[in-house]
Image (tube, rainbow, N blue to C red; front, side, top):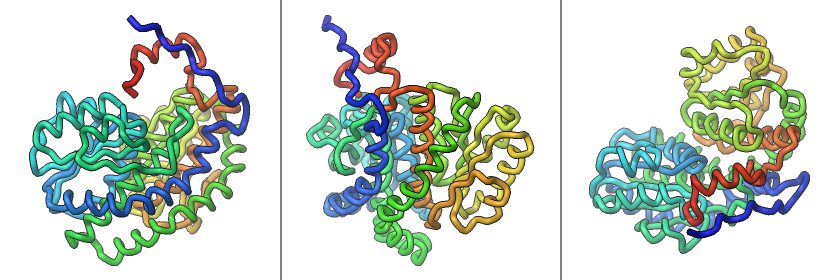
Length: 378
């Protein structure tokens, strides 16, 4: 029996932690992902476009990245696509076949459950694609094609920039597939493609414009009892990802909901001790987001909307709104995740924790991690 690994030694003891640096690398991660993978993306698209169904998979943040990256395929209706968590895909989900593409996202490239899901798909004849930040990892040994995304590995255990870079690569793949199969609103798709090319610049502006506002909100509300996040369509994965980051760094109750699901029951738990983030760009779900904001405000919850800079209606209700550059709804999550990450980061600091290592600096939690993830499996 091998001896357990010792707990990690903190590289930094105070702000700015590595997590903060990684958040600020999001623009460069987007830029590098799109610029450095053009040939690989062309190769993947050429093989995917003839397939009848696409299955996206991963674990944790990587799964939410896969969900976000798959969203643009809703523009077409000739091919079936779905997102299936890796454990489910490896052990419970319906079989894939030679007409299926399975796309697996893993920051490390060694996530055992994700590699197992990809291997299962490969054995059933599926075409397999890996999205990772490291070359020569197990995911590449299984995948038929592998994209190395981002601008280098995420140096904090609280993964942030890798969520965005993986989703950016998948969004680009989806857009190119739509262009080649000639489906969807061509004018809108062309606008999205142009906005995607400029996304890293807009992300830079969002970082500088929201940092201190996020810090102030975190300092004011870090002692609240619960934190909830609501989003629909392309922003639903962001709601899940933001809740995960609050739980991982501040160890408090947090939940991410699809907007309508929150309105069907869970809203009754909102009160003066709740913080509710509502991701509400212009789009089909805007009215329901507005309904939620009005209801939560009436209940005394702290409501923090993330909206387009032209949304005066919601801004007039909530003084806490983050107002971001207006982009197509399918690209809005790449901007709206930034203030959510900054809020989670500053809240963690306010509560006296180190966001780079989660709870792994505590021996009991580090020991528990060795059970969940033996060395070399995550």
